[in-house]
Image (cartoon, rainbow, N blue to C red; front, side, top):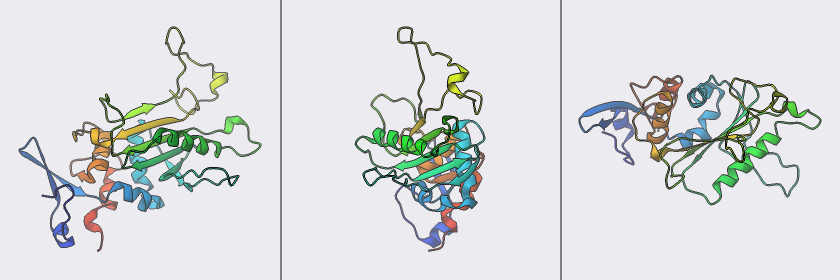
Length: 246
């Protein structure tokens, strides 16, 4: 049985699948995959592997997501005094939206400020000089975190977005269409960036749906044989640790 942090020889790995125990009795078989933080910085940038990222984003957003291209993740600075915007992965969807995906292992001072800067810089770069504001594209920021994000959290995925509510009543307001502009999809209320914080250690390793299967894989670097979420088969096959040469 493969254990967390244990390293075995290539020959041993090729001879065995990894197994993990569930409820102290039942064994579940799975396929060890390369660590996602390494994959996201290397092989996910290959267009042949877009289906892996598309599968995860489809499960997260609850709608089909098609990656059109991966963009340079270090912004061009218009001035030497501008700050660089470095992210692990910057994807462009088929409808022009931008999706930032980052893997963060250690807690970082002012991490949320860095996220805010990254989304703002990315949003600005979707609009060229002279273009109308209607051409501005929405930006999503997704952080796969290997540390906790709060003291009282009771979930393993947190979603943040801007909504306008009554100052006194605290009730949300339905904004006028003339303010929002044409909606790209049903349920989209505004153009402001949205954030997803996913502290992986909070996940209990019980996969109840497609999204849970992806979170399990990111946390454990393993895809269980029974997993069937869209795209996760590509993750299992393309990032299979046993398929790698020395």
